[in-house]
Length: 166
Image 1 (cartoon, helix red, strand yellow):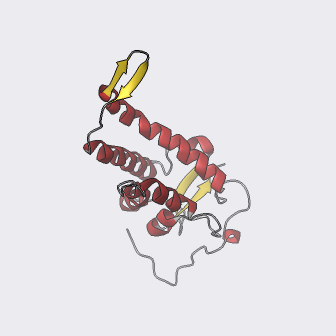
Image 2: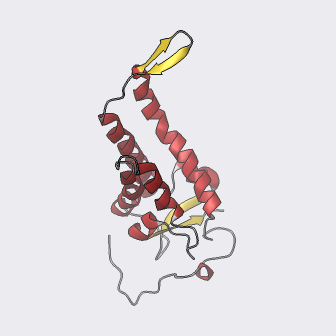
Image 3: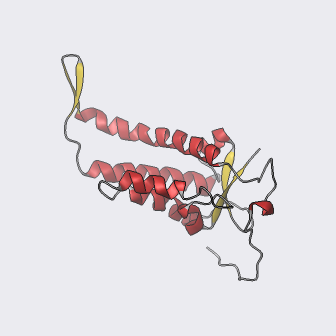
């Protein structure tokens, strides 16, 4: 990751982006729908791994205790999925469906692998904290609400912004 000199102009307000169309700031709703789609996709391999721990009793499914390592697999799937797609295409499948992409705040290019990795590790690592994980995960994304550039903690850490593709 190359650090730009402080004299390089950086967008600081929503007015620095087009009001509509490509490269305009994505709304919180668009981001939320894309994230929800991605979560569902990330759960597919996790559910496949959980199936062996399911048993049927009568007409009910019972879940035996899930191994501790399954939590790390869940976090790993999310990090690999998000990092790979953001570094490769600039958008995950959910973001493609919604019509948004992740870009570097300065310059608008795709994030490099380290930026994409950091961006995905911030929310995913919240899941590792017992009891508070889900709340902290939500806070990472909800921290974008009310900010002029709609950047969550993970975006500010990675130097990214989410913009529309259409």
